Structure formats: structure tokens, C-alpha cells
Length: 84
Ligand code: HEM
Image (tube, rainbow, N blue to C red; front, side, top):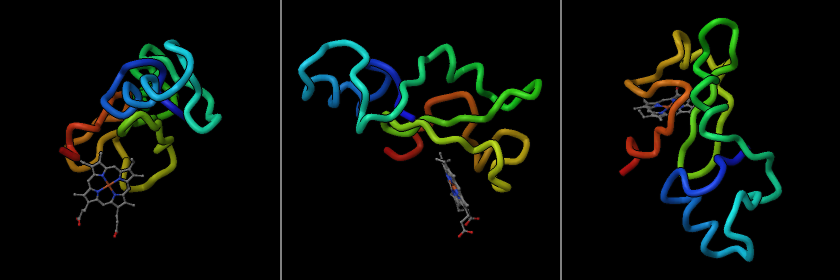
């Protein structure tokens, strides 16, 4: 999955490099809106997603992401800043 439109450094670069300005799929992956990402926080039986540099990872079943957090990173959010 890829995070939709200008939501992180990586997705902004991807948009600049592409022909369209809006919601261009990255590598043909399904797009995830910021609203859908923040809903996917692992609470209330929602899935747990985390975005890193424009890519969205499903960490619902990753044991290291139990309780919807992992070494200070939260599910339902963009964790790119941890990698700067
Ligand atoms: C993108 C989704 C992510 C997945 C699926 C994931 C998964 C994992 C897994 C499976 C391990 C254990 C590796 C091992 O046993 O050798 C691990 C370790 C670690 N992860 Fe992640 N991780 C993710 C994102 C992050 C993020 C955003 C951070 C920043 C806070 C982070 C920080 C770490 C650290 C510091 C370790 C080493 C922990 C230790 O050695 O005790 N990870 N991760």
C-alpha cells in the first residue's frame, strides 16, 4: 500500500516525479488516505497500519507491534520521522 498524496517526504518526491499531481499510485500499490491511515490504529478491531516514506505497512499480525506500538512508533500514523 502507498500513502496518498503529499503526506510524507517520499510520497511528495514520488508525486513530483510522476505525470499526475494527485494520488498517483506508487509502484501500482493501492493508495491509503491519511484518514484511513489514522483509522487503522489497531483499536476496536481495526487493522494496524504504519506509514514509512510513502509506503504503508500492515502490522496487524506482527508480534513486535502488539498493543499497536513498537519501540515508540504508533500504528495509524506516519513513522518516517523515526528514520531521520
Ligand atoms: C514498518 C513496519 C515495521 C515492522 C514490520 C517492524 C518489525 C520489526 C521486527 C520484526 C523487529 C525484530 C527484528 C529482530 O528480531 O531481529 C523489529 C526491531 C526493531 N524495530 Fe521495527 N518494525 C517496523 C517499523 C519500525 C519503526 C517505525 C521503528 C522506529 C521506532 C522501528 C524500530 C525498531 C527497533 C529499534 C528494533 C530493534 C529492537 C531491539 O533490538 O530490541 N521499527 N522491528
